[in-house]
Image (cartoon, rainbow, N blue to C red):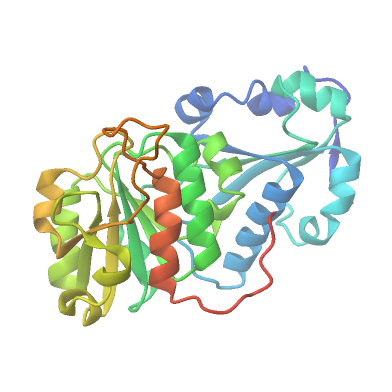
Length: 304
C-alpha cells in the first residue's frame, strides 16, 4: 500500500465528505465530480489514467480526485496505486465505514471520484479514433443501462468512438460507468449539441457514410447494407442509433446514405400479428459494431 495512504476510522471524517451519499445529482451539481465503483471498474479507471500519462490518446481527458478503498482492495490495486501522482488522496477504511458513507453495498470496497471534464469536442474525439475509425451516434438514448451497454460493446470491438446527442444519458453517470464495465474510460466519446450539423460535417469534412439503424419499409438488411457502393467505398462509417421509443428521426434518416434493419423472425403463434419482434438498442449496437469491426477471429474474450 502506498505510504501516504490516509486511514479513515469514522464515516463523519470531513476529509471524505465528497464520498457521502455519492448521488449523481449531487456529484454533478455540487462538486462537478463523477463516481466509479467496484474494484474491477476502479482498476480500469486507474489504468486508463496511467496509460494516458504514458501518452496513450484519450478523449475526453479525465482527471482523478480521490479514492476510498478497503484494505483488501487497496492491496489488490497496489500495482497501479503506486504509479499514481502523490497528490491524489487515497483513503483507506473498513468496509462498514465505506458502506455507511456511501449508503449502499454495491461498491465492493472500492470508490473513486474523478473531475468531470470540459465538454469533449467532436474534433478531439475523431483525433483519438484516427482517420480510419468509425462512429456510433446515439440520438436520444436515455436509459443509463443502454448507454452503458453500448460503451461496453464499443470497447469490446474497438476502432470506434461514440457521439452522444439528443439528450442521450450522461456517460459519466455512476450506473453507466458500472454497466459499461469501465469502458467509458477507454472508448473515445463526445457530446453533440447540434446533431444535424455534426452529421453534415462528418460527411462533408471527414468522409463518413451515414447509416441509420431503423426498421422502415425501405430499410436494407444489415448483411446487405455494407455492400452498397456509398457504404462500401466510404473511408469510414457512422451508425446512428435512435431513442428507445421513437427510434431514429425522419430528419436524421433523410441525411443518411442508407437505413438498415436487423432482420428478425415473424410473430409466432403466441404473439399477435401486430406484435413485431424488436431488439434492445444496445444489442443492435453490438451487431452493427461486429460488422464495422470486421472481427472474424477470437481474441480470448471473457465475460468480465
